[in-house]
Amino acid sequence: MKHIYSILVLLLVIGCTKDFEEINTNTNDPVTVQPSLLLRQVIYDYGEQMSYEGFTAGNLLGQYSTALDFNLFDRHDLKSPQLGGNPWPIFYQNLRDNEIILKLSQENVAYAVYEGPARIMKAYMAAGLTDLFGDAPYSEAFQGDTETVTPSYDTQESIYMDEGGVFDNLDKGILAIQNYSGTIALEGDILFNGDLDGWIRFANSLKIKYLMRVSNKIDVASQLQTIVSEGKFIDDNEENAIFNFTDGEPNSFRLAQLRVGDFNNYVLSETMDEILTNLNDPRIGRLYQPFANSADGEYNGLLNGIDASVGVSLADYSLLGTIFRENTGLLDANFMTSMETHFLLAEAAERGFISADTQILYNTGVTQAFAYWQVELPENYLTEDAPFDNGNTIENIITQKWIANSINGYEGWIEYRRTGFPQLKTISASLNNNLIPTRMPYPSEEEALNNANYTQASNNTDGNSINVPVWWDE
Image (cartoon, rainbow, N blue to C red):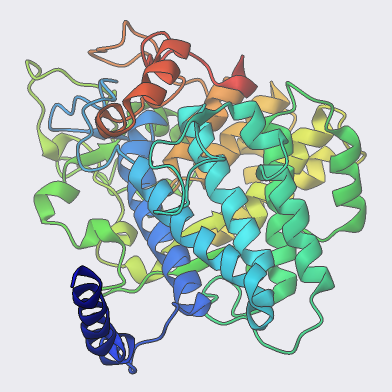
């Protein structure tokens, strides 16, 4: 009797589930996401969010602007993000989505065209992650629910140098594009509109950047010279890896979408004010506004990290320029540019890594930076106000790159950590013993969700200290 009952149950189950998959499948939905949609999403989401992050929190760390609301982050309590200051989830969400694109490109020949861009984007975002935080979950991360949800931390050196790391993915990304022989176009590409050569130039400019970043650790000269000799890098503003914001929502620069009080929280920093004023640099009028109490259209900056006990008036300090709120159609999300590439090459030439004319590279970078910010280059700027050979040439190069990267404040802070330029100030009321931080702290959610691996990483950084240098900065 027991066997008869079991057979009846089995028949009942088969009868009920025979058409289960067909009944519960929505034939109007795709089985897998289209890589073109994901590529568009990754590029836009990462670019939009990191432009905002870089301009709020990054610009405080890089001393482009100062916060008026007694911002703890501006006082270097980096565990207290405010209106920006927590880029960790931006990296991991977009690296996970990008990993889906990469897997689809390897599993389906119809998507092979996406492999190169996916590898290049992975390298780009991974470098951004590790340059801010140092060691980070990498080789076991970005896998969704198919792998461990508590990934171990990889060292920064391995993230850069190992197979599957930054340089490896850049090389493999270039090779995948060069070897692509299909006829299917790259869609969803809001950086280069499907131009695969643009992705190769982007990858090579990134290689220049990251080789310079690790140049204190490895010999980079031969690799840099090879890239320069081949000449396939971003060489003109028309080739920049950017996408444009609009004047109106939903695709305007996010700072324009916030209430006016949030926008008015940020003013010209004393550091930027002094640098631009000493250079007689007219870009100050594009990036900032004369302060309200000025009698003659003057600009005034405030030292970063003000204390709540200090009384300040908004009317006494210069607000950010209208390009960041009213006219954001003139602004773009900046991934990599010709001006930055030329400043990197100018530094490489000055340090003897490549054979090239340093002054020509410097002058080209400055000229392109003025054009990028839509400001006319004064006739005597490169000969009198900001000549290449006036004083410390490396400082001149890095300072000009710092100015040019005004929407990418994290980049300015990272390059300051690498080079010591420009000379940032001791902030007004430091909560970090008057030290400028050398890394971002791991966020509290990592301690809660990945505790064992977080604890080890925290121990390796003196208790998640923001004063422990990353590998390339040791």
